[in-house]
Length: 246
Image (cartoon, rainbow, N blue to C red):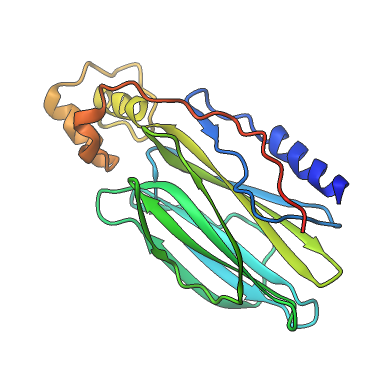
């Protein structure tokens, strides 16, 4: 178990290289262990912020595996599935933030049925600082909840998922962390280059006017933050948290 704890911490550290204006929150703190190689997949919004999440769940009968895969909605477009090993789909659900809001946190509820060796996970979003309802995935008896939130002044631009498997009890265990970036920096880039498809400016960009700044911010769903963009925002600190072992 010590080896599993160290392996996940090392894997999280090795995957921590991101853009200078973005950082990972660190692991949520859900119970985690694995005596098989840990799977890890990351999803990122190419620009702007996460506005929704789609989750599918599969269950294998012979191996008693509980399999989840994920895709993100970035603005108005969906990413591809993360690519975690998946089969035998049972359900597929989507949750999105209300109009012109975006994800600033995610909470996860873990359930467990020891009789059927079933591990379940359900999810809810924090949209622009306001918690929403759970997605409503099939759930066993609740064991624990954990959450990750972006620091004040930042929004979610990516999700990383870890999956471990414990053969004794056929336990599928998942951990998660969010990638957060500055709202103000994203808005400033959009204000200078409101027509750019990505957040970086092209060589032909000119200085944006007040009206073009507002149009750029609306394209990213940030207009509700316009009055606060001039404030100094905090930067996300890299967490040194290690997952608990069950």
